[in-house]
Amino acid sequence: MAGSDTHSLDPGVLWSKIQHQTRHALACGALQPIHTEYEFVEQGGMRFLVRVLANLKLKEQYNRTQMVQHRQGKPVNPFLPYDPDLFVADLSDSHLCLLNKYNVVDHHILIVTRAFEEQDTWLTSADFEALALGMAEIDGLAFYNGGRLAGASQRHKHLQLVPPPLCPDGSPLPVDQAIAPLLLGASGDPQTIAVYQHPQFPFPHAIARLEGPTPNAQGLLATYHALLDHLGADRRAAATEFPYNLLATRRWMMVVSRRQEHYRSIPVNSLGFAGSLLVKSHEQLALLKTLGPMTILQGVAAAAN
Image 1 (cartoon, helix red, strand yellow):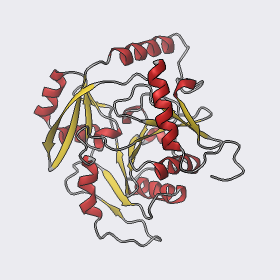
Image 2 (cartoon, helix red, strand yellow):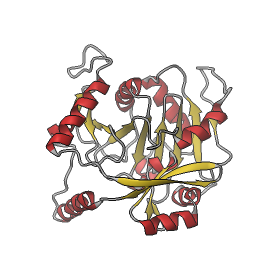
Image 3 (cartoon, rainbow, N blue to C red):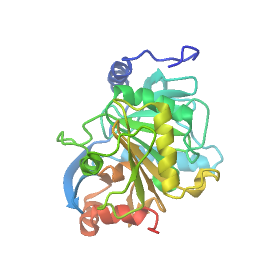
């Protein structure tokens, strides 16, 4: 963090701040964890974590309130102003860190722009500077839902970061297990961003290795641009023309282009492409098993060229 920033975060303190604020937010009721049951479903050589929601009433009630207020011309922005009980830390002059109010995974954080920016705009150097701060302390999964068709539930620009384990049984991230062999022995030339495609992913995607022990903003931004370019995105045009999901760990980044938010009523955001799907009922779980999780991902992704 540059010393000129008004808002700065000392290295090594973010994780302790997340833990402290989580305890506080649970105690005062600001944090409303969504409880789930789960099981694993395999398809296409990948084991998917499928969660079944046990109590969606609070979030559905909140979403209905937002819809009513939006129709009345009074849209709600939960990030402006944000709930101080969910505030974790200032990351920079442009970004702050909040707890995800309706979390499925413990210590799920949001990296939010201080001023309002649309979610369906391209990510910037400032976005990646804030994300790099989070990734330096949390060796987890970062992701971004690029627009409503990519699963974004809020218009205010925010990246997300979840610490391990994503799987309740402590097993590795499903997509990490799939991608790791692909990048094994990949070129480490820092001047070249090699783009890969996984032979078992039946949807348009692009993957690149990230160099170094922890990502830096410049490397993240360059990799992001390379992956978008590989998928044919026109970065001079509005990002609304190219809905996408971005996923990143300290070791790799992946971008998936999208065409729709749901497939046969089953919603998919970035976590779906990480190998973690969420259904609202056992009926939806049965449908997911019938269709297959990889088929659902293919159904929401952009059509293959």
